[in-house]
Length: 505
Image (cartoon, rainbow, N blue to C red; front, side, top):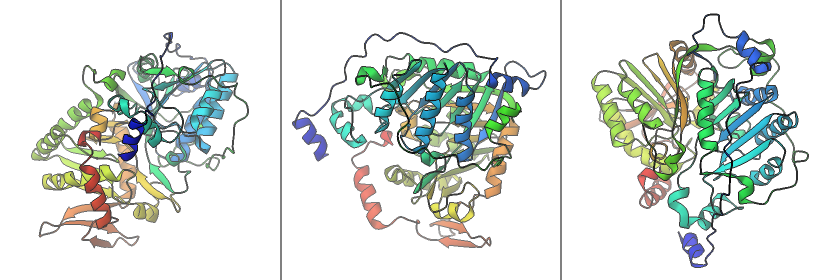
């Protein structure tokens, strides 16, 4: 707070320059004669309805990165990417190098990023965005350029109401025929390559009817008044040369299958045998105008709330952050009264990367237990112990997946956390898929772990909250106090919660 006051007093606040005249650019028609188009055609069963789409879940981090690189390498006409975070680490540089190679062979590349977390990637993006056929745009940019996230926010604090809204969407579309969407950003920790912390996450590869719909959503963001060409914010850089810094090799062993038994996607493309589950689906996306509070129609959070309200037997929710609205609690109360089994998996105190959000979640933890929700909190110690959700080695494991499964039929995967920020402030997107087969595959992954990577939170006979963990031998250990939560952390969380609006969490 003192830093903010000092910045204002010294007149350090930056101003956002004019966007300038930016021509509207739309997605190219699907390119069916390329390698990706051929693979999709060969993998589509005869008689598949035109309204259906094919889906493949991407759980394993290394396979998820390989999938992105594989479709970028195979693209021949167009690549459209939209991300909240695009880091300048080994994974980010590897993707940038693949995009640069695509542009050099004549592929049109459009890269749309949220502006908040650019950091040192901004210089690299200026260089690569100077190439012919390669354009970079930043969504809802901060006036201040350069420096840490904190310093940029301080120097942009006079526009806090605007910049508090962020574009949280994640999407990659190649040749207009395949897409990858879900919870992952582009950074090492989303692909099991970081030393200190790695995320448990979920993406979905899609082909068919949903891809043109996703392309239309991308166009609405790309052409939005809130999207600025990066060159309108900083002078153009010299043309891109060689990639800077080392680029790590993929962590895949040739031929290694993922948790669902799938080969790496580049082999599936080469063999023209994509392992796709075909089903009807809906593309869910907030309009870009949400950043100005002018969104019309149901938002992603409204659609998922309605999905949950219609549950008849089972509702499974996975979200790294859980700060429900009053109407969300009312929905859970009603479905529980109907006898629906509700399971919620989120992060424990030791796994969360947002301690303040966890502190607010604690308030609603008791509400969930009162409703009879099956509650699990992901533990970094337990994920490392069992390694069924990924090989974490010495790193901390943390949940980042945003998904829901309803009645062994509906499956949602996307960018939306089940919290106030996703519902009210950030733009979000996702896919709602009507597929018992896909739900079954996902639940097989859950059953393989048996949720042993998480604490089971419940109450004892005296109504006191307890945390149960399971050993390799199956024995239970009951913890009467919340793990990794001491009095100093509780005090710090309480202090900051007095200053931060719950709707920002």
